[in-house]
Amino acid sequence: MELIDKELKLRPFTDSDSKKLAELCNNKKIWDNLRDYIPFPYSENNAIDFIKYCQTENPQVSFAIEFNGEFAGSIGLVRQTDIYKLTAEIGYWLGEPFWGMGITARAVQLITKYGFNNLRLVRIYTGVFDFNKASQRVLEKAGFKLECIFENSVFKNNKICDEYRYGLINKKTGTQHTV
Image 1: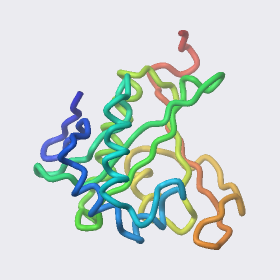
Image 2 (image 1 turned 60 degrees about the vertical axis):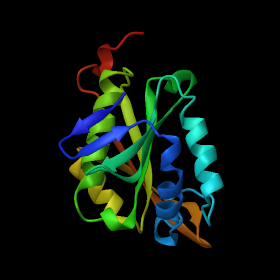
Image 3 (image 1 turned 30 degrees about the horizontal axis):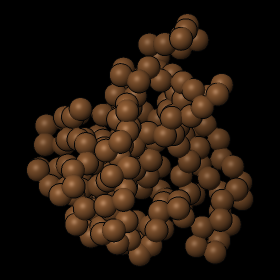
Image 4 (image 1 turned 90 degrees about the horizontal axis):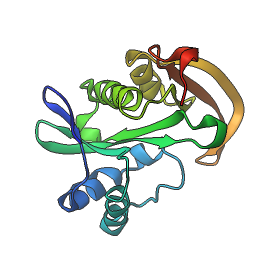
């Protein structure tokens, strides 16, 4: 499955992505805005393991971000369970050479459309560290709304900070959705 918007493509990971994935993700500026379960430093072995995991997904929820034919980052949806089964958390990162080009907002829009149309999700959300203003702007450009601020709720880089929680509702389903 590929999701395409002009020179931007969300596509399945391939084995050949491992070197570039490791190169781009092994960046403290990126890791500073990700959850701690992402290793740092990030090695090619980490990339190989991640790619193998993504290649087993059914349905596919993790995608490589490709811009002008070049691997640029990663984006995915984490499906929730139990009473939250129609909800997913979105996560993403973009390699530093690609920052400031509007790529991430477009990637968020593409995967959100996929989540709503193909996975039949009703809600997609994410949490963003209070200091990550760029990601907050990405989500707002993609149509997400700030739902709340969890004060002093996350611990990153030896600091306690707020989490800004953003969400987007699938207007096509709303409260009329049945499974």
